[in-house]
Each structure stands twice: as structure tokens, then as C-alpha cells.
Length: 456
Image 1 (cartoon, rainbow, N blue to C red):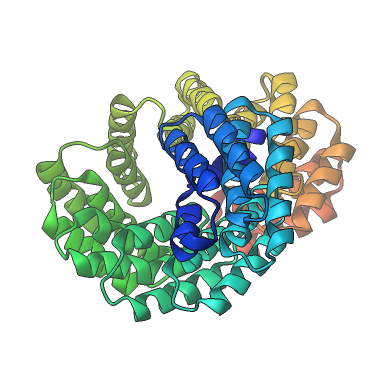
Image 2: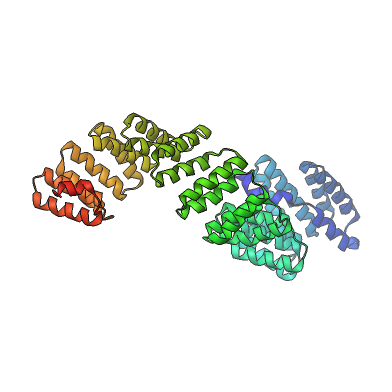
């Protein structure tokens, strides 16, 4: 914990104190100056023990100079960091307190105090001190940068944007390192909209930067500006057509518009330019599924797994396809693959459970699977229906009806009403069964199984 708290403070140096000496050379005791210079040299050489000795000697000769206590506090903080020492931290705080008692407006002491408060979690206190310093020196880049960095860690992003705007206005030469640091934090914290202006600045600095162009495209997609997302995705491909990520982003947008034939055409171009890519192959498989071409869908999902055996969505899709083809062994194999790699994603556990339930096999295992799925999503209507259907296959019609009616509270679908009709039929309640089948037919007039049950 100590290392985490003090990590921010180690960048401090005794140059503040040296500046103080330059301002008041006549007021400093020559013996103190000599000891201070020795201490500063030791500090620069990375020897905090020796630096502390010399700074304490300097204070003995000149106990009324706050800058000496600041220099001493800095070295105790270095020692606290290196040795994880609470005693060194306490001594640093004591030295800093004395400096502020001697001069409550001593800027190096205030700045070091703000850093110490920030490291200890008192961000409000740290910000208050930095505001005070910045109010006294509104053009200070150091104080503004420190306040900006602190606000980045606390999530005060409105203040970050405001400080950055001031910095850019006062210093027309763009500090791209600062821009990159800000955008990195914004990207990590999901601040897509806030990231865009900063990414635009980076792109303006180098309009041929393909990764920046691609990142900008993803940000526009996340903020639902699909027009700009498509523009920058295409631009990224123009800049570097060998990066499969750029093609995949474009493919995702085309897929989301249900343009499945176009997905397949673009994927072929991507393969020629950037080589094979697992995610692209998976998207091709999904497109073939939407186009009702299960044979080619199986081919592409299989290829996706050959390229990346951890791509569990492809395994899950293969499970679904093999189940539809009544190849249960292959379906089970791929569902279990998806469950294992997805950290037991609920949808795959439910799908495997239902595969067993509709066939009336492995019902105990099926119940375990659906219960695990319901633990993750307790009100998912598909999962509730699966549990009800297992009870139906077990002959517990009352429980079956209870679970599927619970599913109907969340979703009105033809399969759910058909299942209710089947349960009422098993319970020898023909009128209720017929009403349920008729409701199912209203929801899906093309259902052949429901029509057959209604004698149509």
C-alpha cells in the first residue's frame, strides 16, 4: 500500500529548494548552504540516507528556512517508498508541517503537500491546494499539469477538459504526449465521446497514422455515429490494407445493417489483402447462417476455430448448427467447448440443456445446466422455458406449467404458448390447450407444428 500511495511523490526533486536559494542568497547561512548543496548532490545520486543527513545538518545551522524542510521531506518520502516505511512517511509529514508553519504560502511546501494528500487519498484537499497555487500563478504549466493529472485519476473529466483547453490556448505548440496520456485514460475508462477531440488532434498531427484513424472509427461507432465510423474505417484500410482489424471493423458495420452478401464480398477482399482472420471467418459464418446456408456456415465457423481455438462464439454457433442437423454428439462437443472457454456463459449452458431436454435425455444434467444459467440470468425467458420443458419431460406438468408461465411474463412468443398447449394436452385439458395453440398461431401464422396440433 505504501508504494502505491507514494509512487506519485518520487518525481519531486530538491530543485524547488535550489530555486529558493537563488531568490534569497544573502539570507541563507553559508554553513547551511554548504550542507544543502551536499544533500542535493546525494539526492541526485540516489542516496536518500546521506541526503537526509546533510539536510538535517543544514537545518541545524538554519532552522528557519522552510525550503530545507521541504528538501528533507522529499528524501524521507523517497525512503518511505524504497523501504515501505511508515516511520519515514511520518517524518516526511512532520518536516513538511514545519515548513508550512514557517511559511504558510511557501509554494514548494504547498505543492509537495498536495501530492502527499493525493497519494493518501485526500483528493479534495490536494485539489484545494493546487487551485490555490494555480490561482496565484494562472499561467503555470507545472501546477496546471499536476492538477490535470490528479483529475484524471479521480475521474473529474470536465476539469481535465477545461484545463487542457487552457493549456492549449496558452501554449499553441501542441503537447502530444499530454494528449496521448489523456486519451489513454479516457479509452481505459470508456469515455468514448470525450476521447474523440483528442484523437482528432493526434490525427491532425499525422494524417497518415492508420492505427489512430482506426481508433477514431471505433470511437465514432461506440458513440453511434455510423457515418463517420464508416468513413474512418475506410480511410484506415486505405492507409494500411494489411491490418485485418481495419477490415473487421468495416465488416461489423456492414453486418449490423443486414447486408450479408456484401459482408461475404468484403471478407474475400480482406482475406486477399490481410490474410485469414478468425473473427472475420466467424462473421462470415454468421452471415451464411442469416442467408440459410448452413453448410457454408459450418465451414467458416470451423475455419475460425482452426485459426483461433479460443473463439468460443464460433464453437457456440457450431453447436447450434449441429443440433439443428440432429448431429447431437457434435453439438454437445461444441457447446461444451463454448462453455469451457466462455467461463460458463449462460446462453451456451441453456442451449446444451435444451438440446437434452427436447430429446428427453440426460435430464438430470440438463437441469444442472439450466439452473447454472438461471443463476446468472434469473428472469431470462428462454432459460425459464428450458427449465419448464425439462419438468415436462420428467412428467411434472404442474411445475412445467409454472416455469413456462413465468417465462410468458417476460416474453410473448409462439414457442412458449405452444409449450403451454403441449402441457395442457398432457394434463388432459383440451380447451386450455387449444387456446394456447391458437395464441401461438397468432404470433407465428407459419408454424406448421402448431397448425398440426390444431388439426389444420
